[in-house]
Length: 188
Image 1 (cartoon, rainbow, N blue to C red):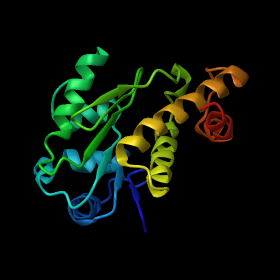
Image 2 (tube, helix red, strand yellow; image 1 turned 180 degrees about the vertical axis):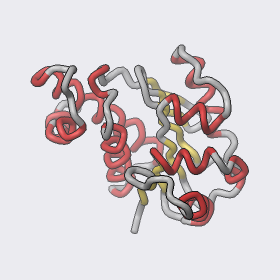
Image 3 (cartoon, rainbow, N blue to C red; image 1 turned 45 degrees about the vertical axis):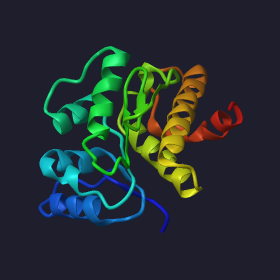
């Protein structure tokens, strides 16, 4: 096993928080954390001090607010600063944050990038899960967490843009993004 995705479809049943914290603190492989795994981490804020391996956190603004306990900034520069501060809570410096939304921020605490691809039609259930899968696959192919997060957000957003061009934004579904991934990779 080279990398692990944790969160999509997980739910918040009893025992989930303990499982998430155990994996977050102890698994040595790169761990891409999204959805309910982020919600579980938000309930256990002292787990940031113990990280066994590289971590990529992929919150949307609501999940981010739960993680840090304050409102998510609205400007890209301020969002990048907030996301970098979250990375810096990891004393080993192994955390990358992908703060999703309009102009998704990718940061490892030392550098950041703003992704300009994507569209409002992507604000629908399951598209974040697709991003988690893309990033996880890229890390599994040997990219660093920083490289995988940057490339993954670009490919994800480009697939969403290609799908919106063909299908429109209003009824865009997560499965539409998956269909347009080959075209997104070809557009790199």
